[in-house]
Amino acid sequence: MQARDPSASEQSDQTRLQGDQATLDSLQATAVNPGTTYTSLPQVGDVIKQDQAVDSLSNEPVRLL
Image (cartoon, rainbow, N blue to C red; front, side, top):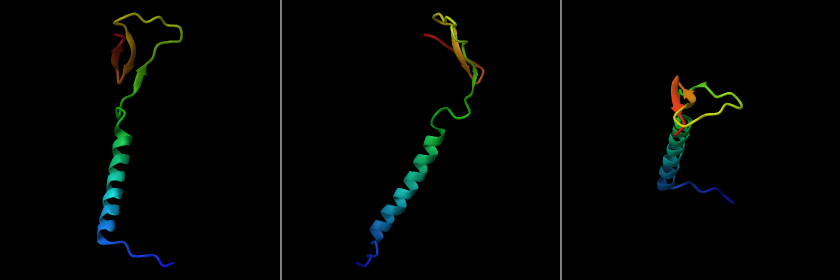
């Protein structure tokens, strides 16, 4: 069997797919709060009450609702 040459439409679709996959990879890499760092976490056994900080993200408290 001989491989056939892809049509211009197939080549265009393949090029578009590759571009879309690269865009998706890039967006997924930065989707989860880029640059955010846990700066504080509760100790094992700590009792956290409503409206107390559960942890800190980038030095900003995250309160328990």
